[in-house]
Image (cartoon, rainbow, N blue to C red; front, side, top):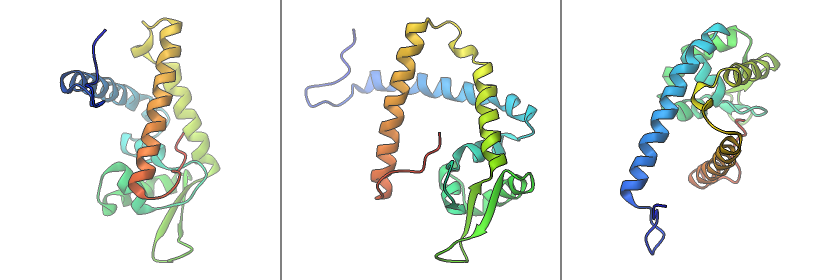
Length: 166
């Protein structure tokens, strides 16, 4: 078994680099593989990514979505327009500042997210070769990693808790 950490707890750069490369390779491949599944549901890749970044039960400023997608807020307008026209999100004036537009999933948007996850679950070739115990371990590790992600986001934003995405 590899030694991942030094005496101070820092990750070994070589092993961490290999982990990062493999994680990104699987993530990017998975995203490319899912795009046609989303297109069958009537969503472009950008619209699908935007829909997956919105919280389930909370309205957020348009800037939140832009930040999650790592784009300028002006670049989400077209995608937001299409999602709104499809009845998947609702755009409203903010309560604190009416100049700020907020975005919220509609019941149809929540159903579309459920449909997206069902489509993903129906076709997962990257995991076919894994044994049941490996899938259990992978799910446990991904849940632990996701918890660390949300904790990091919370610390970065200076707010307790984060918007529930899944």
